[in-house]
Structures are given as structure tokens and as C-alpha cells.
Amino acid sequence: MKLAPHLHRLGNDIVASYLIDLPEGITLIDAGMPGHWRDLLRELAEIGRPLSDVRGVVLTHGDSDHIGFAERLRREAGIPVFIHAADAHRVRTGEKPKTAMGLSRLGPMLGFLAYGIRQRALRTPHVAEVVEVADGDVLDLPGAPVVIGMPGHSPGSVAIHVPAVDAVFVGDALTTRHVLTGREGAQPAPFTDEPERALASLDRLAAVSASWVLPGHGAPWHGTPADIAKAVRAAA
Image (tube, rainbow, N blue to C red; front, side, top):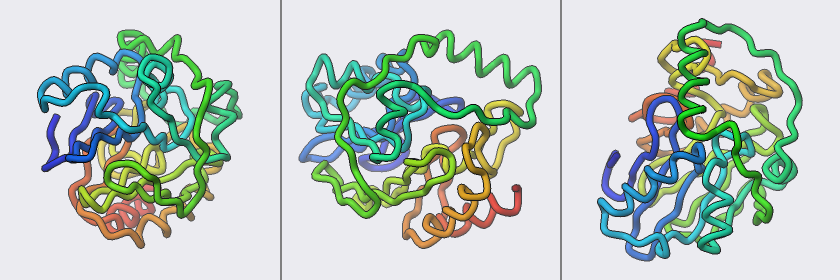
């Protein structure tokens, strides 16, 4: 799905990842669920680009619904996978602390589970090899993505700012659709390791200049990072 020039979304409001299509190559932000491999190939076909044009995939954090096809890209096409060092162990092993599920509604919760089954998320491959990054790094990938540390959802949760497409990709630093309640609108994401720390990290997001804020779950936010940070705090 094309959002803007050079900016595409894979997946949907339940689970999303993103594709940045530039003349020098393609950068992916997150890798959704394993079944989203089909979405990736379909989007590449629509824009007339081969898989070999993908230069790297940058993960906003190491949870299974964001790393879906990353290992397949790495193993089959030799495409590097970038993640903050603090989440490298999580993405290699799947190990993470147990967090309180919080509010839920049966319908949306079952819908999220059913969607994950259809997208083969019950057997998400861990990523065997990663390139570790740090807060402030500017990656040598199309669009020159900038890593912004936003710990809270996980220790290595990051936002990725890509000025070339006027967008910041936030993973689960916030959400615009709660996968367990179905509630829409800017709000804190569920399954967050340290909720208070995640809210504090919104200060870093608010300082970014962009016209798109793109979460891993929910509708794209076409507006300023400062405005969505304010809205998330109000909903907390």
C-alpha cells in the first residue's frame, strides 16, 4: 500500500511494516509476521523492483510480530538485519520478560490471534545474525535512517527517522489501534516491559520533525510527532 512518494506499508492496521523505495535501493522497517513475505513480494512487483534491491531491514525492537520474515531475508537473500544492541538477545532467542496483558476484549483479542495464525506467527524464526546499532546511529542504508532510542516497550525499542520520506517509524513505542481491545486512536501499546519509561521516551519522539508517524499496529498518523506524543500521554 503506497502512503506517499517512496513510502509504502506492508500488512494492515493489525500488524504493519514499511518499505522505503529510493533510487539507490530499498530499506525495510520491521518485518511483520512470516506470512507478510507475500505482501513484500507483491509490493516489490507493483513498484517494479527486485528483491535484490533491498539493502537492509531495520527492526524497531525484537518482538515476534515485528521480525516475521527478517530471518528469511537474511538467510535466502543475504540482507542484513539491524537492531538495537539491547534487543539483540531477544531477536536471536525470543526470550522476553512476562508483562501484564492489561485490558482486553474477547473479540479483538481472538481476532489478533486468528490473524497471527493465518500469517504463520506461531512459528516465527529467530534471527541468527544481526547488526547491532545504537542510539544516534545514522545507518548506511537508502534514506540514511537515524536511530532514536526509545526504551520502555523493550530495552532496545527505537524509533527510526527517515527524513527522505518525512517519516518516523515507531514500532510499539505507541499504537493507534490496541490489538487486545480494538480501541483506535493514539495510546500506549500493550505488552510493554516498562510503561512509565515508555511514556518518558515520548519526549524524544516529540522532538523529531516529520509529517508521518508510523506504528507497528494501527493506522498511519499523518501529523506531527509532538501531537501524537501529546495524544498518547492524554490516553495513558
